Amino acid sequence: MWEWLLAPMDGASAHDVGGLLSWHARLMVLAWGVLVPLGILIARFFKIMPGQDWPRQLDHHLWWNTHRACQYSACLLMLIGLALILLAPPLTIKPGPHFYIGWAVLSLAVVQIVGGILRGTKGGPTAPAPDGTARGDHFDMTPRRLAFEYIHKGAGYLALVLSVSAIATGLWQANAPNWMGLSLLVWWAGLLIAAFIMQNRGMAVDTYQAIWGPDPALPGNKRKPIGFGVSRREG
Image (cartoon, rainbow, N blue to C red; front, side):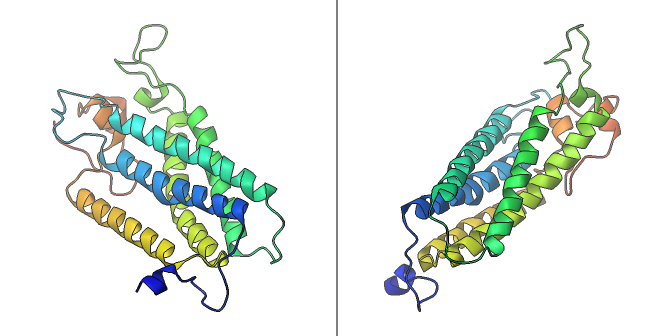
């Protein structure tokens, strides 16, 4: 068993990719295989925290701070990983699926970063406008905020799916040891099981309602929740 775990995926050749490529792979796996899916899981299922007295206690920031920490850290690791691959000696093989999928994932990450910068103002009672009113792109669910929500969620889930393919093809291209692929499969399976359980428990709550409550008169509560499987709660 130990011999198989330590053996490369393709037993006919050796696992020898050099220092720069090795660290490129490690950083990208940590970024896209660990931090990004963890950040998405937390953002989807922990907008209302276990034990939170909702709707008397609104706008819990733990999910938001953790989501940002995971995704910002992943972006930083991604940039370092990109620099390492650009500095590494040219590969002797032609660009394959990993090359193209990797650039697609990086492009989607740029979309996420730019979208986050342009998402607009928050508004509401806790972040009023300069004129003292509750006006804000998020509170009012303006076209700008709606565009951000659809793009951010769509691009995020697409990047997550593509990143799995990028990691899998990268491990194969590097002829990585079997234990690496197996460890990632166990980790991803654990996340999927946790997501399935929390989805069935109704923990994927609408962001707007989690922040400002269930009052049907609020602008965002007059619209359908954005995102598949997202639900609302009764007050």
